[in-house]
Structure formats: C-alpha cells, structure tokens
Image (cartoon, rainbow, N blue to C red; front, side, top):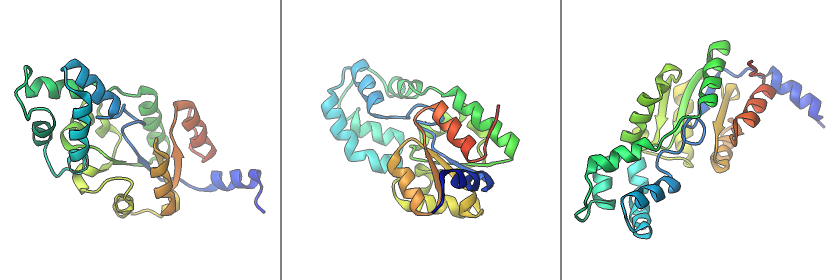
Length: 216
C-alpha cells in the first residue's frame, strides 16, 4: 500500500514538461457563459428565456466553428429588427471578458522557470477566441491552441484531448492539465492525463507545488 508521503514523493519525482490549459475559468473569465448572456439580454432588453432557447439550439455548432459569429447572432438576436446594431452587441460581448492576472503571471513564471510547453485545450468560438488571445496577449506564453473552433470538436469529447496529445508529442505522464470543470478533468484522466480542478489561485498554486512546479 502506497502511503501519502510516498505518493507525494513520486509526484515530485515526476517531471512535468507540458501544461494543457483551459482558458475560460482559468486564465480569463468565461467567454460567453450563462451569466454573460443574462447581462447582454438585460442591457439590450431581450427576452432572456427566448434568448437562451435559441442559444442552446446553436451553441454546439457555434463553439465548434461551424458557423460564424455573424451567423450565430443573426439566428439568436437579429432574427427581428432591433434598436441596436450588430457591432454594438458584438463589442459588448467582447467587453465582458476579464483576465485572472495572478493565474496568467503564474503560468508565465512556470513556463520560464521549467521551460514548459503550454497548450490550450478549450471550448471557444472563433471570433471571441481570437479577440481574447490578442487582447490579453496569450501568445506571449502559449505555444499552440487546440480550440473547439479550430478542430471542430468540443470537450467533453475525448477526441479533443487525443488531438492535443498528438500535437504535444510528449509522454502522457509528463502532461498536467488545469481545468475548472471536473467532468473535463475526469475525461482527460481516463486518457492518463494528470489534472488539477481549478477553483482559485491558491489551491491551484499549492497543487502545482505538490507536483514539483514551485515558484515564488
């Protein structure tokens, strides 16, 4: 039987070379989550219940990059005449994103200190994804993106993790995945990927340290 002390020692001896990261809920706020759709509906005087029904019908194809943002909004918002423009609504959508600056700085430090490969594995729609990458300069530390809008498959489908593994080209036991949704952590775990369920900076910082990724 392996004791907690022995397990901690084994974890510290395991060399992590690659981080798989979610964006929404880890590095940034969620891109177009329920709470943001509620705020948008309130600001633009939309019927929220109807808005949610229409959104749910297009949600998957939108995040998988099979329709554009303009096509999505045409079906969900602009199927009737409005007293606001497409640009006004889009700009408000984009403005809702906020960064978790402590998490971003932590990942940057870890990348520099441990020469980590950083791979984003996320469910993101194309236009919003590209805005968020540029606005918050994620390219300054992310090596490449396995985003649903580019690969046309979404978490929790294990296929998106297999694509990330193929791209990473490192042994699976060298990969650590940081994600705020437990189901997605579990799906990755089934493929042999060690995961951290992110709830806040402090707990993730401590979990990283226990796995040998310590920084000041």
